[in-house]
Image (cartoon, rainbow, N blue to C red; front, side, top):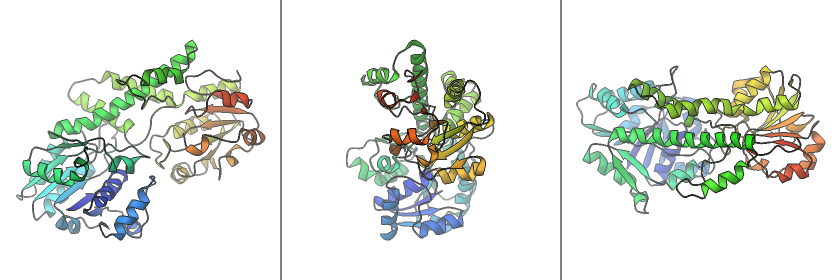
Length: 437
């Protein structure tokens, strides 16, 4: 089948590459000429494990194409996926301007029947809006479908090729048949495809992400309470996760959630609720707790240094919002850097993958190290902000040699408590006893 993907951001590029891998001819459209030219030459514009190999394979197989010409791609395709940004506006609501503009363009350009698929995360009722916009521009038959993505950054290729389920919202039998055909390679292997109405599909995505944000935040609250009463959150987590009604995933405490999805989707669902005179009280609490959780270790750093960190050098391991991605949107590292700088500290950061993205924002406000150990040179303390695998088994003897003080503030609970204790480090993590106090 010939398919167009409008938007080559994180979702669009992974979706397009996956659909090409399934044997379709996929035309990816983006207005950024430099980006499109780079992709034509095999340059993957995002970091995602295992994406480059699949990307290059499908370019070479002539199943994956890139263009800035929407009309050219539309003329070749029956199915059009919209994978466009829906950033939060000033009031937290999702900005649909990109989606509506492309819907308008499709209405003006289409010359035959199309299935327009909303892949972006959009508020309830967006399919109706897209339908109205296109219908205002053409008399040609078309259908609008909601098909939300459920990709985890860092595992997107795995998730896209092995989905737990496929959710499709549509009210047209013809569109349903076409979508079933696209996803037949998955359903043939037992992956369920769940058909529903468009509004339910749109809400499914927001509900899923918001629930996971609540789950993470609840665990962070438990972790903070553990510190008050002397319990160990790692043991509590294992005990909870063993209940199959709860499960082990998303129970790891830390310095809050970030990224492109959870913060944005929680805000958007809160705002959508208010528009219907409904208050998502649990989501409002989740958002407030997460804001505080992100920088919860800064007060502990101040406490360790007697209330004043002016002039102190803090090494920071990790800048991405999570491991295995270069995404720094809503990253806890940025919140902590901002607050530490305001308090007069100096930051030397290391993140081999996300450094360039941070440098575009912060420039020379902080220093950047070429290795995790270089970041530790004469550091007063180490702050771990991202759980990159290379940080899991460091050389503590080398760390002690390079640092002024053997002090670690771990926002991701990277180490069993006995390891920093055996190596003589002060070690403050989340929801566990402090070593060296």
